[in-house]
Amino acid sequence: MNGGFMYLAAIIDWNTRAILAYKLSNSMDATLATDVLKMALAKYPAPKIFNSDQGSQYTSHEHTQILKDHKIEISMNGKGRTIDNIIIERFFRTFKQNNIYISDYQTIKELKEGIKAFIHKYNFKRFHFSINYKKPMNIYLDFIQKVA
Image 1 (tube, rainbow, N blue to C red):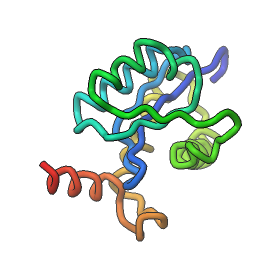
Image 2 (image 1 turned 60 degrees about the vertical axis):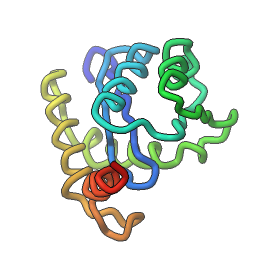
Image 3 (image 1 turned 90 degrees about the horizontal axis):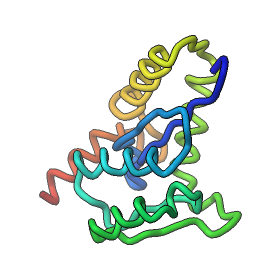
């Protein structure tokens, strides 16, 4: 944005491509990563495995402790192995190409509203090729109802 950077952290379900939680911040730090993790865990069942890169925000004591407290296996990409995180990387590519690069957000409020609208469309309205042209959140919610 004009005058600075904003950072978006998001948690995606690997199998369904559903964005479970996201948060925007003016800094990329452990608080951003832990806040979005707490948001996801407050709303949805804990996953068996949590994958991230090896950034300091994900290797921080606070972030890894939350995962351990919830008995979630920690998986981190090997150095230089961006392919391990391909699902969230593809989401961010789609998000940038279909929203950020074509929008002229002037305020943080506009940016937040744009992100919210995009993620809603991505989760509930967009048909995804990689999941047989289904909608991510519909598949995710069906799955958690079946295992509940």
